[in-house]
Image (cartoon, rainbow, N blue to C red; front, side, top):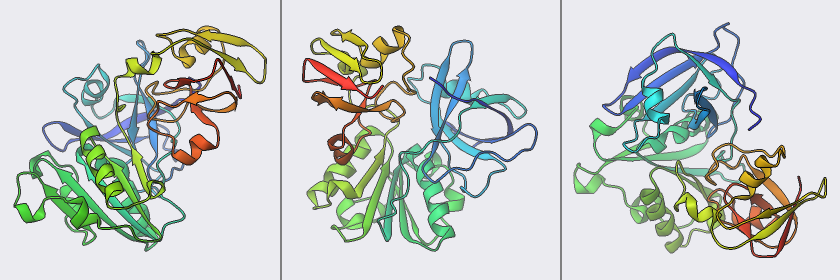
Length: 320
């Protein structure tokens, strides 16, 4: 990982729900933070000693560079990331990366349909801020188990372009992809973020309704499958196009792990195939894509995730 870490300080901390904390971060010296686009995330060095890094979406208005806002759900199966974030208090220091974005607002769409499940509202809230600022046509559907489990409700319910859908509410306000998103429309894009099962349901429903896959934009907080599957199935060789170096990738190893162990300066962040930071270009060979971040077009253009994908050919040559 080759992050340029930025020092920040927690200037505000609020328990929005029993399981969600909202944190505002600013530079200790008062200098503006780097600009970002709606849908961006930052890496957070939760525990420097343990090298624990997690990614969190920026949910504040992109034009506010005085502070970054994060909303973090305490995961029941947390390995230290979300729980470490919940332990933060005002005045604590935190190191973060510069913002990165693979879930931005489409510049090809005239209308934007944002569909959030639970904490997945965070990047979509930033999109709503950005679209509102330029007078774009959009609607945000925010789905949650209940009002008590929801974050930013007081802000969102005042916006006429937002619809709230609670599982424990009346049947007529529950979310339906067919009723609330409808059929495909030209120059319209759908953006989806939330728990895996929720996203799979919305995406499959949209595809069944006839929406082309290229109009559906998504960001996951966890991989679709067990990450162990990323390293399964056979042995192959990776050749580096810039140096000519060759490395054998055995069953149970990932391309990224082998390259890093060999001292290769390969980019990476999440190591789960969901953030896109490790993407490189394939120069030769047939890849076996196992990520959940690349679009069909990007795969056809030769993009490849070293942390999760493998090869169907004996040799895979990468632009590294």
